[in-house]
Amino acid sequence: MDIVRLRGIGVSPGIAMGEVLLSKPVVFTARLEPIGQSQIEDELRRLARAIERTRQDLVHVKNMIREKLGEESTLVFDAHLLILDDPSLLQGLQNSIREEKARAEWALSKANSRYDQVFESLSDEYFRQRKADVSDVLTRIYRNLDARRERVKTPSKHHVLVAHELLPSEAALRLSRELTLGVALDMGGQTAHTAILARSLGIPTVLGLHDITGWVREGDFLIVDGTEGDVIINPPPAVRREYQAKKEKYDAYRLELTKTARLKSMTLDKVRFVPMANIELPEEAGMAMALGAEGIGLFRSEFIYLQSPALPSEEDHLAVYSKIVAAAYPNPVTIRTMDIGGEKSLPKLNIEQEPNPALGLRAIRFSLRNTGLFRTQLRAILRASRRKNVRVLLPMITEVEEVVEAKEIFEGVKAELRRAGEKFDEGIPLGVMIEVPAAAALTDLILSEVDFVSVGTNDLIQYYLAVDRANEFVSYLYKPLHPAVLRLIRSVIQSAQKTGKDVTVCGEMAADPLSAIVLLGFGLRIFSMNPIFIPRIKKALRAVEAGTAEKIVSEAMKLKTAQDVEEYVVEEVLVKHPDVFLMARPAEIRPSRAAR
Ligand code: PEP
Ligand code: MG
Image (tube, rainbow, N blue to C red; front, top):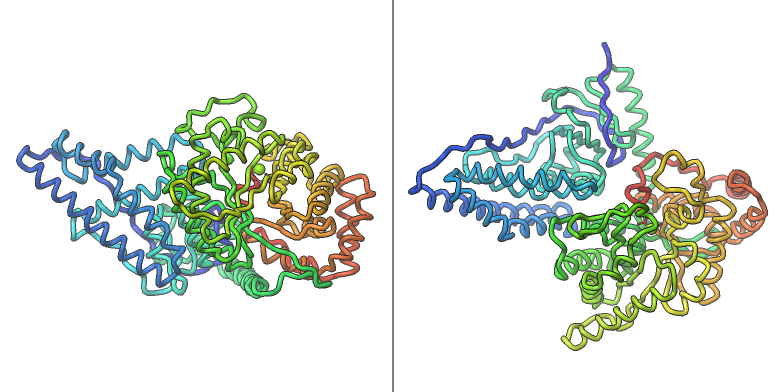
């Protein structure tokens, strides 16, 4: 018999094996059943009751999830309550009922397809994922129109959950750390709420399988390989055995990771280093800290703009920042002002299509052109800084003038807040991303204007080597260990060290054990990365001596090619510290957006 193997996107690593529990979706009506004029008021009341029940449900689920998973996992419900309170949503539904003389079911169904269209037309995957939140709220209201309709049941035995799509609040209810062995969905991608939740619960998950619900029946046996993104339906015994062995290996590795998270961040010769996390969603902060992050080294705040169809208000910004700041406290949180523009263009911002977006009106260039948006963001960051654990980071700085201009705006916003009697951290540190080669050459001058720098190797390498970081045709040229790149990064780290101010590397390079050892050898002490990679970097750096790394790297800098550097460093490190690379590099999770 042929083995049915489906390929999707592995969003939460590990292997799960078990019986399928199939979750049936709510199907919105496709029929307009007209009602009489006299029934309109009744229908509006029915809608209002369903909305009220939905509010009670959401508050109830939120409390339940708080108990089950902790405060940071409840954020999605705050978002849902906000959507529920959105006056334009209610108005739209009421108008549909009144104008079309239709039932509330029809009004909700229409609203759902309208939001579908709006979100589908947006090019960014993350953006499209946020549609799930709106859909979730509409589905709940729909269910609540009829008290007899099936409510979400909490499962009672071990299972692999298969569904077309899991609405965020359903995901929180249905996923149980004890009973849900794995998850496989038709829809979804890396940034879906289900993905984030599954990762924080440690449940192997594959999304984006397109039609797994068409392939399986309740009770089938399923293997979910969340590392590779594979799902195998009713596998023969030999395949089961193969995956059982893989599962045991992975579980042992996972245990090792958890242990590593609790160990001291110190090299063999007792040099302290600091692992930090790069995050894109507030929900990731808690998991990052659990994986051993000693703070958030980079919050890519542009994702706030990608989350809702409207522009975020100061309060929207503040809500997100406050959640991260609370999850990380007392550790620092570095909020990078929006890196919008370029390929992260937003229709709602009316950004012109540019012929060469990577070299265009991006990041700080965009903020300095749109000072209204910039000031709103800075006000919120300042308001979130009361507990003195917030730092501000400016992306894509090319020249000192930009730093000066941004600082003037920042000072202006501070003065405004003082006048309004708003409290904030008067000593809030301001830093700059070094990701344009020109800024790298000016590190010392830039540092005379700011408190710290953070090296964004993802962009720095792309601009220095003239290699599009997302273009697979030239990816063979994208080499972090290219001797030219190493010289540049070494010079940035060393000029920063002379000033005594902090320097971090927050590009993907910091997440690669070999590169991290090279950076350690250059004198780097703060490494910020996708949280999932923190344990392996901790393990690698704990297994070397900083002094030895320094010696090895200074020899490696005499070599001519990236390959020579790599071979030399690997050999030398292995001779001195054979267990450095022991923790294999599992294809844990594809480096998310950072490797766009
Ligand atoms: C970088 O460029 O290295 C960086 C961290 O920023 P982003 O990946 O968000 O461009
Ligand atoms: Mg960058």
